[in-house]
Image 1 (cartoon, helix red, strand yellow):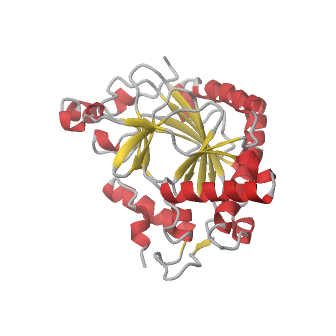
Image 2: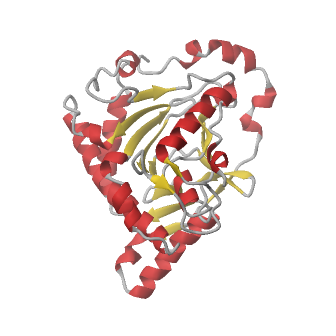
Length: 331
C-alpha cells in the first residue's frame, strides 16, 4: 500500500541486527489492563459540594496516577467522529505526498513525522506516523477545508477543556490560576494526529516509545483498538479504551509547577501485528518564554523556561536516545 511509511526498508539494518534477539521481545511481559479514574466533569457545573468533590477527584488522580479519564467533557461525539474520518483521509495519502508535505506546503516544517531518525536499535524505534499541527497553522490550511474546519472546532473545545482542568488543578495547589491565562494561549498549543500501522515485528518495537509528555496537560481521544500503557507502581498497565471518555495526563511542566505533587508518568503505545490504531492528542502548553517555577517551598526543581527544557531534551535525545527530562532540572 503506497500510504505506508517504509519502515522495514529504512530500518533494515536495525531489523536484521536485532530481530532474532529475544531480549528485545516485549510480548513476553504480562501486562494487566486497568480502569484509570473516570471523572464526570458535568459535576463542575452543579452545586458547591458536587463541584468540590469533582475537583478533589481530579487532583487525587493527578497525584496518584498522573492519568485519568473524563466524561461529559464538552466535545461532541459527532465532532470526534468527523475528525476521525478526516484523520484517516490524510494518513491514507501516498507516503511520498505525506513526506513531502504536499497538502501542507504552507505549514511549519516537520508537520509530518514518522519513525525515529536517531534510532540506533529497535528499542529506540517508534512504529508510528503523526501530523503535528500548531493551532496557528490550522487557519492556513487552504488545501483541505474539511480537515481544517474539523481541526478548528476540535482545537477550540480542547483548549477550553485544558484551561478548565489546569485551573482546577492549580486551585487544589492553592496556586494562582491566572498563570494559565497569561502563558497558555491557543497559539502555544498544538494537536497531534497519530497512526500506528500494523507491524510485522510487533514484539520487537514500540508503537510509541516510553516517554513522559513535556506539556502541562495532554488530552487524548483514542479508538477502540487499545495499546496505550502507563507505568504504575513499577509495572506497565494497559488502559482500557472507553468510547465515551477522553484520556488526560499530567505533563512534565505541571509536575515541576506543582513541585512534584502531580505526577508526569511514563507511558507508551505497543505495536500491533494485524491492526492499525488511531488517536488524536491535544497538548496544553505555555509559550517558549514562560517561566516554570513552583510557588511551593522548598522547590524541588530550579526555575526554567519551556525553551530551555526543550533544548535540553532535544540534546539528550540526540546524545543518549532518551529524553531524560525533569531530573536535569533538580534544585
